[in-house]
Image (cartoon, rainbow, N blue to C red; front, side, top):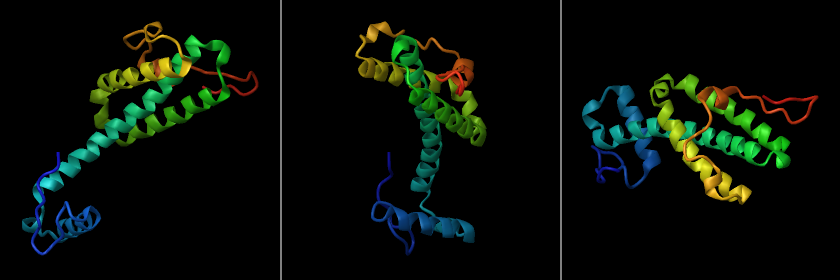
Length: 158
């Protein structure tokens, strides 16, 4: 929740022009002018950056899980694009975790959130009843990270 609009000392209010506000806050931090900082909004934005990284991990895993469910529940309809999407999202999740090692404490929570969305998406995209998909994630983190998904015998994508 954003703090109320506060015009900082001779600066732009957070609510009026976010971009300019960020530039001014950055300049004040670099200059060591801490008394002029909009502390409430600055703290909120810093926390928001962390939430964004967590949500990026959840999003990458949701796509992986969606395609894993489709592979497992509609093997006759599997496509190369599903395997490529899994590979791309695995790489994205790997980068997110490498750049944000503190997220490792929240892997179980991220997996639970990702699976919830993947399950709903798989039911919608496959037109299979939701109850066909397990209520809890049937895959381990190791499955999500490295289960192979070969589509073409000559060009397997793991």
